Length: 634
Image 1 (spheres, rainbow, N blue to C red):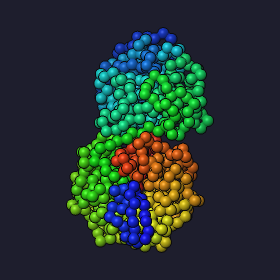
Image 2: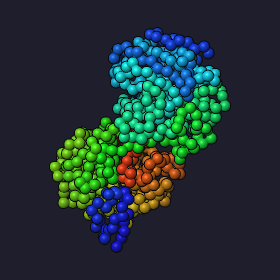
Image 3: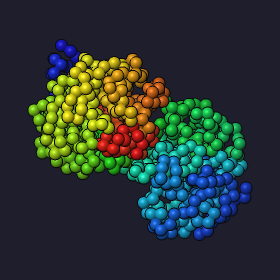
């Protein structure tokens, strides 16, 4: 008799033989301020931002949504008005990441804050289009300690057509939140926000994420997201804001600024302004900021340095109940299979709003669903462990699969993946097979042998080959052609594989493997040769693995942490990984088009979002498989 720990979740399951498992096992059941300008911007008086592209703010785009309405606001350093600061308004670029932004303000391109930190840009800008994302940047100014050209503050404002007449605040909180959410669309050292033409939705969703973190009219950190179901890392945001305020509230060249820039130096290059400093922290959250004072004008703040400087939001609701392997759809919404019987699907918007009601979507044969995958039409497929079927729901949650798509060979499907043509592959744990379904839900092939041994995860590479992680005693990975020809009769071993439960493919065609019985990940090349020695270390046993758009590796670890590795296997995250408050045991993990990392935790029935931590990917996964975009930024 062999005792087997549930690979996804917290229960213990007993296997009487290699082909026998209890129903639900693995299911997780597991200097002189001027007056603000009105109508015509005043000339800048202190400091200029790094230009969007050429050293001089470009001419505003025209022909869009008409002249801007009465937008006004205030710039603060801490709780003190920042006088004499130059305020710029930019439209994001869509010609490449971190490039192409344009200045929207007419005339000199900036307005200057008065003695109360106030500014007004009424009638001074034209929206390129109502949906263009815009942001404000304040440069220089005096918060009472003297003029400081190292002050650069930012606020992501959202769609140009929605700016309206509401007041806006720029301060250190808005800067921290904007920098983290937009980190993957910026480059430290300039004020440019931009994306590729293929990922405008990813950038738009990143702007939406900012609204979860602070109130744009007050500049105060939120404690809950606007939808009410997300817990914001208020004390961490405030602590980071205090680090910036220590510099902003002093004169340029102060010891506080010098220390901030020294501590946030990355790659030997020190930042020269506060926005660049916080961008370095956002893009390198394992950075050590412990020598800086975390208290200051924003409270409550952390009392001491945390494990890491990621910003993570914890979401609840939507029917979450033992959430398993997740997927992101083409709109950036996150889908979670809840491994109950009958099962449900939870859907969350890009900002964590529940889109699946209080109980989740049901029907379609859902029964202990272990994993979901989304196709290019927005349909959501689920692998049902308890009744040996596949479910299919449309993007609105309506079941399309009756009592579930079934075949004689589909036995305890534990995971699934979709190829470029829309075929769906299931890893069948009970009978050591893989079933191929077409896009209509009909089984068209059954893969056998090839080293299959309690197959627990499946992935498709850009050549449409099918890779399977085998969690049985052989500690192996199998590879098949799309039509079922095995690349090896015994599977590929080595590289530290031990109870392989996850597999992901990088841009080079290498397979990365999550090992549930050892705190390492493995790497093998496209021919099956191991590349990782005894495995690359992570903090705990690994439940899942993914590759981001920079071809780097992310793992969901059973102690609740997530890890980030370079493609060489070198650790990017700390030895302890990154970990969110409240996380107890990560199960599934997915990266979205904004660079957010999402994880499930079925011990607390929560969904966690690590904001802007990864490089954006093409979504849904089928798009990356079809268009040779695995491990590449869209």
